[in-house]
Length: 387
Image (tube, rainbow, N blue to C red; front, side):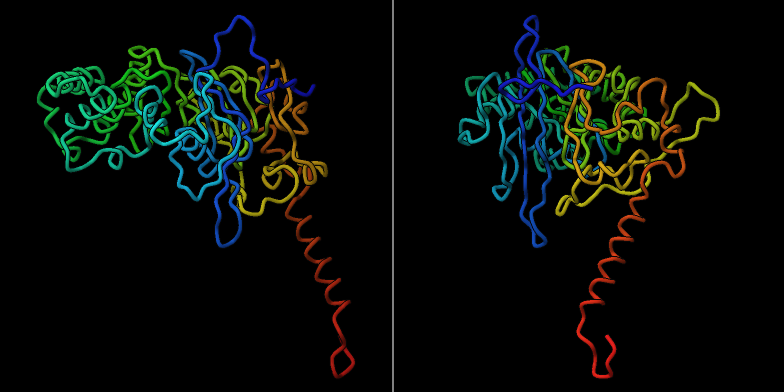
């Protein structure tokens, strides 16, 4: 495997035949202060999204997906320390004044939040909130025209009887209908980029499929690029062009959907695939990833996935791997042992391999025992002459 050749922006050079990216995130880091120390929520994330492209950001809860999107939109609290670069059409967003950023948010950059009930104001009618989204950025539009636009948007996202439901309050909508209304608000001004933060969370499978269809309709209507944040790889398969896998606040693999699903080079990615139910094989058992993600306050040296990884070796406990090229320059992964995942390796081959690799728990237990023995040896003797 060869190291990725990065350009001045810290990413792979753009092929000359591709359009310039709409959204370019470079070495983004986000830290929060806490009583226990700094929380390193995002650690050097980079990606690009081009016109009409869908980038899926996947990972477990706490991996930094949502914090990354909030940093891009400039919606983090002032206590957050954000560094790196976020460029929209070549314009730097980090450090931009709020009044200038507000001209882009909801207009050229739109966001669909996880919980539609907290995204919608419960005391205002749905139609009023849609019309407000239009008139905030287009004050010359009359209230009548904005309300007409609201009706059209509700119809577009599949709300039945939109001319009547435009006068409904959020609590009169079901969960799926509220999510459709939030998508309609994101579409209101034909944005260039839509960031969808787990838009199918807490919805049943049938409604999830409808919401995904609505998102596709939103893309077709606005011709927008999309950053789709999810923990469900089943959502990714039918909706994304590129996939970014995050773990412990960092990118651990990035590539096309085919690369991620058929040629994963990071054990964590393979573990996520093994946790996905399959219908193409009989008696297929899920292969879970044992353990839990690490604390982002005091990350130990080495690969943060090492305590859960069956391929772990001594080098994994010392050096955190960098993103390096795999089968193509556009497919990169952060793993010291990615060559062991070449070929037709399945999740069961790796995660059911028994005692392969280093027993991290045993290593930590031995280190603790050694430290205790050293402390006992250096302790002063007691009055009876014993240590």
